[in-house]
Each structure stands twice: as C-alpha cells, then as structure tokens.
View 1 (spheres, rainbow, N blue to C red):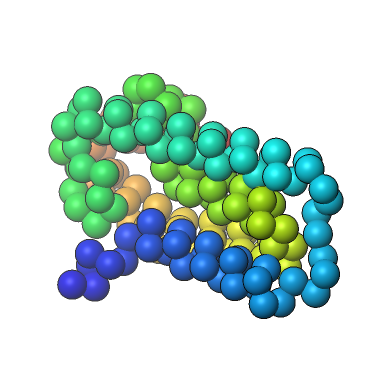
View 2 (cartoon, rainbow, N blue to C red):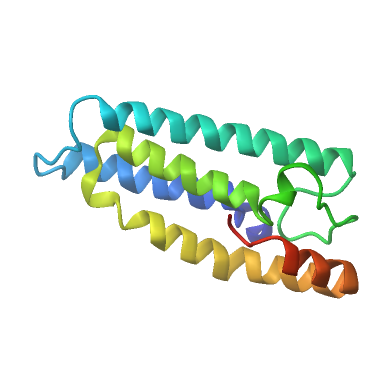
Length: 150
C-alpha cells in the first residue's frame, strides 16, 4: 500500500500544501512584488505541465511505465529525454517554484532545493540503478550524453 502512496506527485502535493499553509498562516507580510512573480509563476507552472505531457507521451510511445517503483520496459532517450534524464521531476520542481512565486510564499523558497534533494535521493538514484541493471551499455551511453536535470 505504501508503495502506491510513495510517488512523486504525493510529495509534490505535500510540498505545495506546506507552501500554501505558510503563505496563508505565516506570510509575515512578505511578498515578491506586484505582477512579475505571478507572471513568472504562471510560466513555470505552464512549462512544468508541458514537460510532463511531453515526457508522458514519449514513455507511452515506448510502452514503458511512468511509475517510479516499477521496472521499465524500455530506455527512453528520445523527445524531451534527449535534454533531461528526468523531465517529469524537473517539471515537478518547476511547478513547485511557480506556485511558490504565484502564492507569494516567500518563506517557502527553501522547499525547492529540499524537494529536489529528496526526489533525487528517494527516487532518481533507485531508478537509475534499475536502468543501469536493465540497459547496461545503452544507459551508460545515455548517462554520458544527457544530464540528470538539464
């Protein structure tokens, strides 16, 4: 059961809930400014949603799983995966940063590097280990050609 709850969208939702709570109950009157933060926040959230859609399309096209704890059926290196080995996690980070900006949750900015660190330690390292085990030479080549985040 925990395996089905321990997925990145749940951790993103938790980080978003903390940011919203911080802004709603402990904002201390801090703000990023009138309009630019809303605009930038919207662009980051929109960019994150586009990244998720592009990554999901590629993974579906290659008939492999999008679920982090499962063994992949294929090594996806095309499309958005040419630019980032982890476009969905990058998208999650963009969405978190965008919502923090949009909500003016200034004190929640440290959540972004904490979230990135947690996702890397909790999901990415294990996923890369599975990919390395299942697609030895191909993953080694891909790992050298494509960066983990950007």
